[in-house]
Each structure stands twice: as structure tokens, then as C-alpha cells.
Image 1 (cartoon, rainbow, N blue to C red):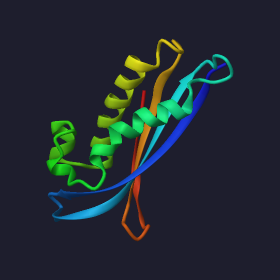
Image 2: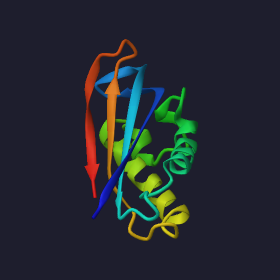
Image 3: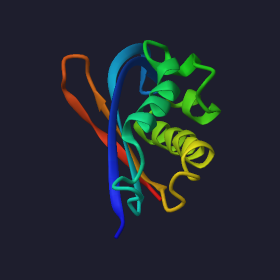
Image 4: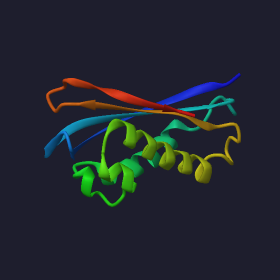
Length: 131
């Protein structure tokens, strides 16, 4: 039976879009959903996965996303929930393939959701990319 492991992350970063030119900060929330058959009682060790995914997010925190060289060219050009979801799907998928598939060959990245908030907590919305 497939089980889903869900990890949530957040960071603050600024961006600028053609519809709103001036750089402005947002709180970005990222949800990573992995699916697989439990091995030894767990899909993966969530502490270890969290550490690895957090390391991938760390260079984005407190940065201006349009200028951040860690992002893909598409995400830098238009840093939106949609382009960041695609970026995180690629990065987190690579981390799973390189570091965790040997521990559990059934594990796969099932979905990435990126939520966008104003610094005061007002939610704008989200984008979800599914496998």
C-alpha cells in the first residue's frame, strides 16, 4: 500500500514581476509530497529528507529570486508559484533519486505545492505540480 510522506517548508524572499515591477517580499511555503511503500515502518527517514530539502532551499532565503543564480533561468525570469513549483520538483526529484532511492526503490516525488503570502500573512494563492 502506497503511503504519502508530506514535508512543509517556508522562506522569505523578494521577487519582481512584469505586472508589479518593484521588488517586494513574500513568505513562500513549499510542500513536498513523496509516495512509496513503507520499508521498516517508514517511506523514508523524514528527518534526513527534511535536512536535504532544507539545504536546497537555504540559498533562496532572504534573496531576490530574479537574481538568484541557484534558480533555473525560467524561475529567475518569472519567479511565480508555478515556475518555483517546477524548479522544486526538479531539484527535490534529483535529491530523491541521488540520495534516497537506494533506501526505498518505491519512493517517488508525487507533488510540489508552492503557496504565496504577503509578509502580513495575507494569502495570495498557490500552484501544485503533480507527477
